[in-house]
Image (cartoon, rainbow, N blue to C red):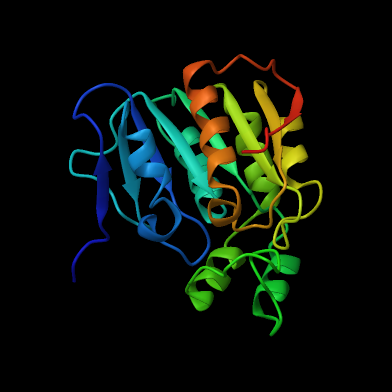
Length: 218
């Protein structure tokens, strides 16, 4: 059986940005715009679920996780000897029970009504949600010394209203950015996410730890 794919953009050297996709999704679905845009000036690696690049992850790496990928980013940040250069969590979910029930409901949408709905594997998404342990992720955030950005989607139907804030309050060096979007932020607000992420990667402490701000409308 073939291993899950690893997608690369940008130069072959320098600090790496590692992209981890969302619930029931893939790098190709979630990062079709973000990966190439970041790859203009950065080494970017996109990892589908369970994918491991040959030789392992380069260090130091900037970890960027969306949805299920946010949980994976926290586990990578705290599960090895190498401290990441930074951690970005986009639309993290800490309350899997309510999120799983919402996901499996017939009228559920990742997006707000005016946006096109992305294709996801709902069965895999439900399994990934069932594997979420909110208390574990908060504890891992508290153990993450690297600079952290948590991006909250204001109309997120999967995340609890305080999920992102709980992570920011737990982590020693985190800040909270809000985007006016449903959970499918890469379809609804790709430019705002790119701007937030690029600024954080360039200057992680432009906003101090504990601060909260909103994305500028594109």
